[in-house]
Image (cartoon, rainbow, N blue to C red):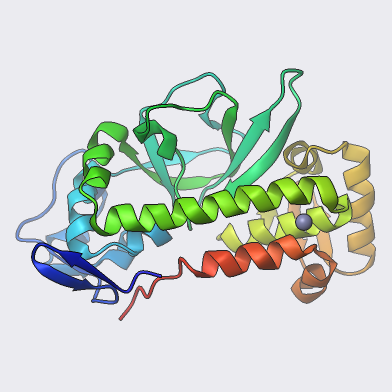
Length: 279
Ligand SMILES: [Zn+2]
């Protein structure tokens, strides 16, 4: 956990108030133009974003990114990055949840990571190589803030909090992918499904999950009939309910008890990113 960071102007305290001072209204085509509140002398960054990584930034770092951030919305199933494709944008999810899929030559896919408001998608766009086996799709429709890599790369290169926060995230992201790989091999699909639902629920901003069983089977890399039997069993035990592409978690405690260890391990790791955002 980062507490303080040394800059050429001295130490920035990690839990300093997240207030952004502006001398004049932000205007322009970027994300900032959506917000009238910016004409105030100061305003809390928390009113502009829910993304954990952006909220972790000191005001001065966030202010440099702000003119370049654009709000974009995605429908469920929409591609963020395609295999063999290239992209010039990075995305900070706000309400959208993305699925990082890996694809085999025969077209089979399986989700290897989930990215919600706690993270960022597309860090490879600022590196020298974008893996050709990655396929990022929208799992839950919603909003994200995007920034062009050409604007983001110099900020990342400055070092400081932005770089430190993202390196923290990359470390946890690798741990998340590793855990999912072990999970996909060693844990029963019944447990995997429960862990997956919990991870998704943590990143979902609504009271229900809008997903069909077909979509879930696709992301988990299992056959639809198998998933239907598991979902029926959970419904019979009063743990979840579902109707017309909507899933409701009725008993979260029992769902956690039915999940494999991967959910709690991943959640503990992510708690590391829960920077103090309000002091
Ligand atoms: Zn597992």
